[in-house]
Structure formats: structure tokens, C-alpha cells
Amino acid sequence: MNAPVAVVFGGSSGIGLGIADRFAAEGMTVLVSSRRGGTVQRADGSEHRVVRCDVGEETDVRAVVDEIRDTHGRLDIVVNSAGATKFVDFADLDGIEVADWHHILNVNVVGAWNTVKAAAGLLESSPIGAVVNVASSAGVRVAGSSLPYSVSKAALIQLTRTLARGLGPRGIRVNAVAPGFIESPWTAGYGERGQEVARIAPLNRVGTPADVAEVALMLIRSSYVTGEVVLVDGGLALVD
Image (cartoon, rainbow, N blue to C red; front, side, top):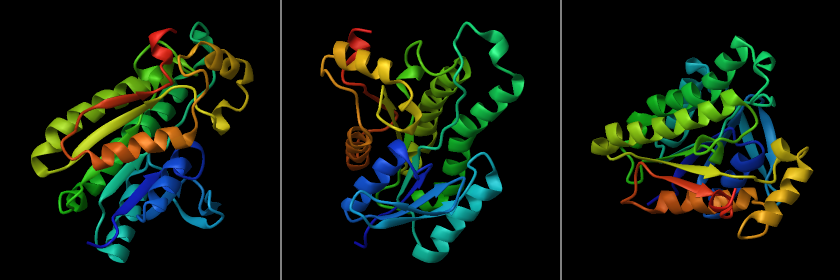
């Protein structure tokens, strides 16, 4: 069989880039998309080509999937790592505008819907046919960078489960990873929180994009698993 073809939406940095790097290291053909195009450096020093795509725009997503079909003739794996947030305390209701809700939900939830809808025809023709959504521990418990972010990740988890039920008969598996505190550009300004996590989490450290990528790869390989959400938080949910 030819190398599996994977697309990582939101794969130009952080968790998405970690997943793209891990999949490429496994010999997959990996296409990365983000709201900016160009290239991004891989861990091994080579580069991923980045295709410009706003996942909240259905036409953008369709264009990416059409390019993959025309170039590779197949698509085996979709990873939804594109994300948006606004850093606002849960108690600060005035700090969130209606426009923030629309933007965050459009990227984090509708964006994942757009990618799966566009890719479903190719995925059901694949012997792998797998989707991995990057949710968050903030969608499982009351945590996260803002109220709409937490709500959006809870919605993404439910979208994962409902899509798994709906698409299972078509041979498409849909699972999610739910990272906790992960070293990334998003968490760079949260040094004190990172130190606290490293102190209280059972594994006594914060996570890395590589940690999340390993679980994403596990879900791709687990052909009889669908509709599952795997916490990747070093055990923090057990104590926090």
C-alpha cells in the first residue's frame, strides 16, 4: 500500500505541528494547513509546505480537500487542530463579546464539521478512514482560557461522538485527544501555571506536543476504536 495521506488542519505550530511531524516520521504523506501559507520547519530540520485555509470557511476547506484528491488521489487521515480562543477569566462576562463567541465556535466546532464533511467521501474509500479532533481537558472539566473556549471544546467532544456514530457504518472512525497543559505558543505566557501543573500532576511535568502526537497516532492505529476521547494531561484531572 502507498503511504497514507494525512492532512493536519491548524498544523503550523504547537500541537498540530507536533502531530504533523510525528506522522511524517512514520512515513505518511502529510499536508499542513493554517490561516497563513508558506512553510514551517519540522523537527528534523526539513520543511512542511503549509496551505492557507481558514477552517471556518467551507470553501477554503473544500479547496484543500480537492487539492489533496487531485494531487494524491486519496485521503486517509484528517486531524483537526485548528483552534481559536480569547484569554478572559470566567467571571469577566463583560470581557466576552458576541463576536468572540461566533469566532471561537466557528473555528473550534464548525471548522471541524467543515473538514469532516468535505473529506468524508475520500475517507470512506480509504482502508484507514480516520479523524482525530484536538479537543481539550477544558471540554471535560471547568477549565481553560475562557468560557467560550471551554464550551467550544465540550461541543467538539460531542461532535466527535455523534460523527463517530453517524460515520461508523461508512467505515470512518472519529476520535479525539483532550490535552491538558501542553508547552506551546499558546501557553508560553503561563509559566506559573505550568510550574503548578508540574508540581501537582501525578507525572510531575507538563506535556509536550510530542506527547499528544503519540496518542493521536495510537488512535489512528486502533482500528476498532471510535467515538473515544483520550485525556493527555499527565493525570492532572485526577487531582486538580
